Length: 415
Image 1 (cartoon, one colour):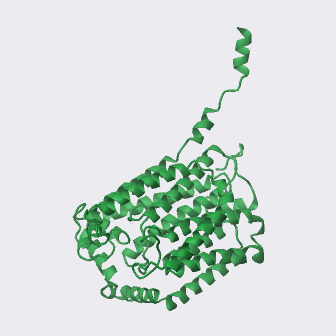
Image 2: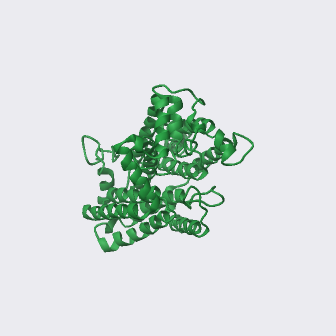
Image 3: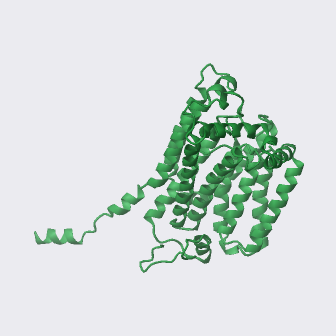
C-alpha cells in the first residue's frame, strides 16, 4: 500500500492545461468572424436577386446566394484546418506559394478575360489571383523579414531585393489593372518593414517611392485618371460625383437611421452598380440604416483589436508579423470599401471582406483567419517568446498607452 502511494505521488501528472491550450480557439475572434459571415449571407441573399438573373443568366434568383453559401462553408472548413497547421511551416512553403501566385498573375495577363474594364480573373471570373497574391505576399514578407532580421540596417542586403520582389508582384497586379490591390500590397509591405524594425530612413524611402509611383499611375492609367478626376469633382460638389457614388449616396440617404428593412431596398434594382459585391455596404446601409452600418464598422474595429492582441501575444517575431499583416490587410480592405461608398476615396473596385459575394475573396480571407487562429493557439500555449533586439522592436513599435516596451515579469511571461 505504501509503495503504491509513493508511485502515485512521484509519477508526473499529465498537463491537462497544456493539452487544452493546444486545442483552444480564440473565442472573441471566432464570434467576430461568425457575426460578419452571418451578416454577409443575409446581405448577399438580399442584394443578389437581380444579379442572379441578369449577370449569371440563371433561372433562379438565388443562384449567387447558393454559391456564396458553398464558399462560406468551404472557407470555414479551410480556416479550421489552417488553425491546426503550424505557421512556422510556411518558412519552407512560402517560396513555392509565391511562385504559384506569380504564375497565376502572368496567366491572367496572357488570357486577358476582360470583365468590368479590367482583366483580373480566371475561369470565367471564378478565380481572382490578386486576392491570393495579397495573402501570400504578407506571408512571404513576414518570413523574409524574420529570416533577415539581423540585416535590416543594411540597404543593399535587404531593401533592394525585397523591393524588387514585392515590386514585381505589385507591377503584375497593376498591369491588370487593379490599382487598389497593388497599393494595398505596397502599404502592407511598408507596415511590415516598419514593424520588423527597418531603419526609419529606409522606410521613408519606400514611402516616397510609393507616393511618386501612385501619382505617376494616376496620370498614366486611363481608368485611374478618370476615377481620380471624378473623385476630386465629387469632393468639391457631390452632384458632380460619378454615377456609382451618386447611387450609393441615394441608398445611404434612403436608409436614414434605422433603414427601410431587410430585403426592402430598391436601389439594388434600379441601377446601383454591383450591389452584391463592391456596393453591398450601400445596400446594407439602406436596409439597416446608420445603426446597422455602424454595427458592421464596429465589428471590423473589434477584429483589428483582436488581431493585434494576438500579435502581441505571439510566441515569436514570425507570429507577430503574420498576425499583424493579415489582420491589417482584412481591415484595410474593409475601410477602403467603406470610404469608397461614402465618397471619401476614388472608386476602387474591392470587395468587403466576409460580406461581399465572391469566392476568391472569401477563400483568401478565411485562410487568413485560420492562420491567425493558429498564431493565437500557439501564443496561448507558449508564453516565452524569442527575445531579440528585432523582436522587441516588433512588440514595441506599437505603443500600449503607458509603456513602449513589452516587459517580462518575474516568471518570464510577456505582459
